[in-house]
Structure formats: C-alpha cells, structure tokens
Length: 213
Image 1 (cartoon, one colour):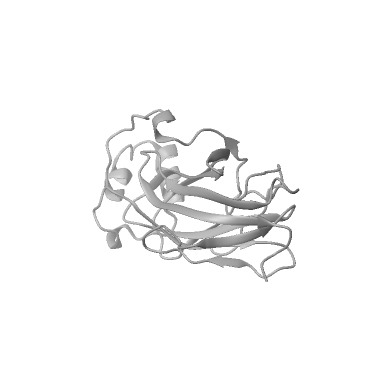
Image 2 (cartoon, rainbow, N blue to C red; image 1 turned 45 degrees about the vertical axis):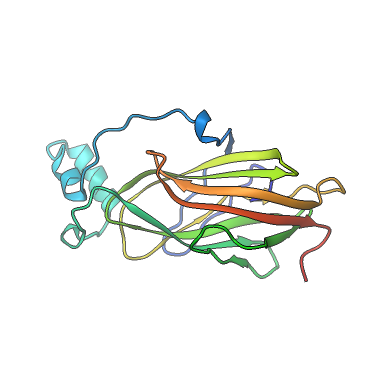
C-alpha cells in the first residue's frame, strides 16, 4: 500500500499459507488492460465431470478442491470472493487493523506509515460458490494528483472452503525524506481473470516522520 518495494518475501500464516509471488509494476488503468478471452463458466460439479477420464487433470482438480463436499456447494457458475480483513504488519509494533467499509471508501485518513519503515500487508478472504481463477491484487498510488506507483500481485486460483484463506504480501518499505512525507491517495482492487472486481477501495494515507500516536 506504500510506494516503494524490495524483493524480500514474507511467509503467510493461519489457515492457509500462500507463498507470495514477486510484485510486477504495470499500469492498472482499465483501458490499458488487455481483455483475456476465457472458456465458458461452469459449476464445480461440471468442472469435475469435464475431462474426468484425464487422470492428471482429475487429480489436479481433486487436489485443488481438497476436502470440499461438492454436494454442499450450490450449482452456481459465478464464484464469490469476500475480503474478510486487512491489516498492516510491522515488526515490533501492533498490527494496524484496517476497517473495510461497505462503500469501499474509508472516510478521512485511513492510516499513517512511518518513513523508511518495512511492513507487510496481510489479508484474509473467503471463497464461495465456485472456483475463482487468477485472483490478483492491484494497487495504484498518487501524490498531489501524480501517479507515483502502480503494482500488481497474482494470488492464485482458489476453491471454496469454510475457513478463510490468509495471504501475506511481499514486504514493502516506505520512502523517506522531506519530499516523501505527506498525504497520498490510492486505489486497491481484488480482481479475477475475468477482471471481475470483488473489492475496490479508494482511500488516503500519510507518510510521516514517525508513527501516529
């Protein structure tokens, strides 16, 4: 959520540990994204029936679904992704827990980061109805109306399960110096391969000389 990154990665914990992939920088404006043509959507039951004679594909699908009881899943083609929690993790400090408003627009200043600090964004999310393919996180940051950072991280493909998944993003470091301090605006999205957006957040944050009291 800041605007500088390094190559360090952090392990995720909780119900499911997902190894974070390296962030790649790119323009997130929708008019710059190429539309990807995907195959027809189908329910989980149809996924299992398709290519059932291909042993390698069958094993892959069974591994992806884990212990999911297909009979308890609705015959729905569209997956649903709900972001359950967001927090900023800094060593030797309490986590900054970010409340997610239903509107997706936190009022006022959402959080403050100390210049030159290292942190990870951690979030949990729940998948229901169907498999979600190519879930990704995008983040764009502006300062005084000028874009200063744009990044994307692929999260992966996930099947429905009763417990939430937990993911820890690649470690980031905030810039430092008098010109880095101040207020920033940002837009964060969680999308899938169809560019279906499950959560869009527009917010402001500060980078200051020290942590907020």
